[in-house]
Image (cartoon, rainbow, N blue to C red; front, side):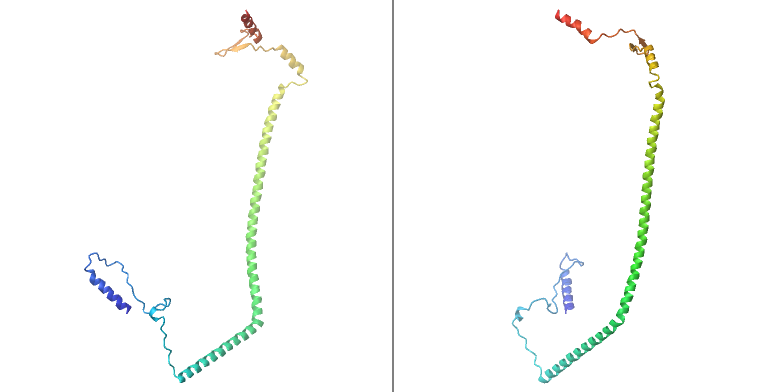
Length: 227
C-alpha cells in the first residue's frame, strides 16, 4: 500500500511539473507517509480510550485441554531444568576433586614461568641501563679530571713565567751585600731632571732656569696691592 501511494504521489507531481517552469528533476521533495500500524510509543487514541474489548468466548472443553497442556509443559520444563542443574552439579564436584587441582598447579607453573621470563627481560634491560650509566659516569669523571689537569698545567705555566721574570729582574735588586755600591753609584750619577724635548726629538739639558716656588711668586703681588 505504501509503494502504491508513493507511486501515485510521484505520478501526480510529474503530471503537474509541466505546468511549472521552475521544475528541477533533481530537487528533493518531502512527503508524509502513514505507518501501517501505530508505533508502540504513541498513546492510545482519544476515540479508543474508553473502549473495552470483548473477551474471547472459549468452550469449556477447549479451556480444560489448554490448561492441561500448559500444566504439562510447565511440569516438563521444571523437571528438565532440575535434571540439567543436577548434572552440572555432579560434573562440577567431579572436576573440583581432580581437574581443579591439576589446573591450579598447571596455572601456577605457567604463571611462574611467564613471571620468570618477564624478570629475566627486566634484568637484562636493567643491566644494560646500569652499564650505560656507569660508562657515562666514568666518562664524566675522566673529563673532569682532564679539565682539572689542564687548569693546573696553566697555573703552573703562569707561575713559572712569573718566577723566570723575577729571576731575571733579581740581578738589579739591592741587597745587603751590594747596598754600598748602589749608594756610591747614585751619588756619582746625579740625575738632572731640568731638561726638555722639542718637536724634532732633541733633548735640551740645563738651558731653562728653575721655576720659582709658588710662595715667592705670590709675595710681590701682595706688596703691589698694599701699595
